Image (cartoon, rainbow, N blue to C red; front, top):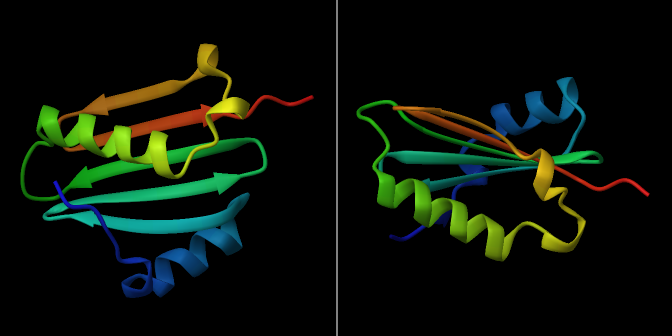
Length: 101
């Protein structure tokens, strides 16, 4: 599965997220018909994966999660005990709380 950064194609989404939420960075990625929105805030990372046309396949869910865990999330500051997951056929939302000192 190839995951491509397409953030530049979504300037309005990025602008609105930065303006109206606690997000520090917003990035949009594409894996074919599946879109992933990655957000970093002071207190958490957020990953939203969606597909408008069909249910997200298990291999897509796993591949996208692995990509972000490896490439975009600082594993050393995530509170793994409090990860929140909403898992629906066309939507996957994962919130990774950051450990506060």
